[in-house]
Structure formats: structure tokens, C-alpha cells
Picture 1 (cartoon, rainbow, N blue to C red):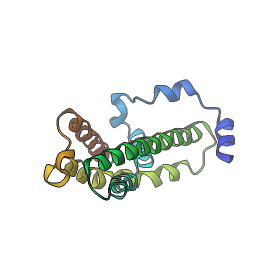
Picture 2: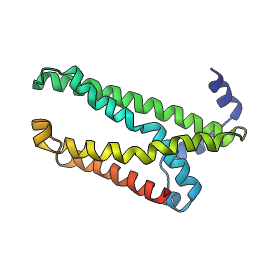
Picture 3: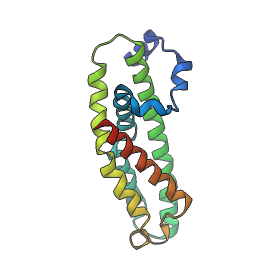
Picture 4: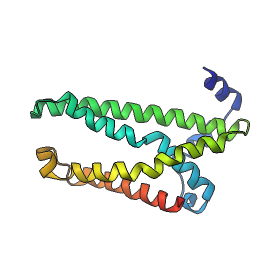
Length: 165
């Protein structure tokens, strides 16, 4: 509740906030923006979230039959999308408070989220590699266009981390 009050007191420019959802190419040229983008990415995606949800498939489909796996994947995908969407909204609100509210521990808050962003490739690279290996996942192997998107995401994370370092 306190955070909602802080957000209301910050009176953010919502139009500017929505305009920043799709950043422009200048992002990688501004060290402050790279730092902030890495913090938001680390806070939203969180490496442990990816491992948790990939492990839940095994837990919800212990028999390993196709029907159980399909059902588990569907449920886990909804859960992952929901949790990442919720995290994005919360982090956007944190960003609004830090940008439009009183200054203070904002840099510390962002810094605490940059570390998970730096760890993200350690979670994402193996997961993308594993889901594309039919020896590991059998008929559930991801191929073609659906596989291009995660590899592009990996490329974006590596580029962002490279610019950060």
C-alpha cells in the first residue's frame, strides 16, 4: 500500500512512461540508460524464475507422457507469462517512483537489480540450448521460427551486458 501512495505522490508522466516501453537505438550510447535497462531486465526476468518454471514442467508431468507434458507446459507458460507481466508492471512503477519521486536510494535499488541481469545469460543460454536439443527433450524440441526469438533475446541480453561492462 505504501508503494501505491509513493507512486501517486510521484505523479509520473504516464505518456512518457508508455513511450519508453520500446527504447530507441540511443540506449546503448548512454551509460545511465544501459544501467537502468539492465536493472529493469534483471528485476523482471530474474534467472531463478526461468529455472523455477522449467522445473515445474517435470513436477506437473511426472509420468512423462505427451498429454501430461502438454498440459504442464500450458499451465507453466500461463504462470510464467503472468509472473513476468506482473514483475514488469511492478518494475515500471518502481521506475516511475525513482524518476519522478524524491531522489534517495534509487541508484542502490537499480544496482541491486543489475546483478541478476548479469547472471541472466547463465540461465538463458543453457535453457535455449537444451530446448533445441532433441536428444534432451525428444519431440518437444523447439525448432524454426519459435527458436529464433529466444536466440534473439539471448543476443539482446548479451549485447546489453556487454555494453554494461
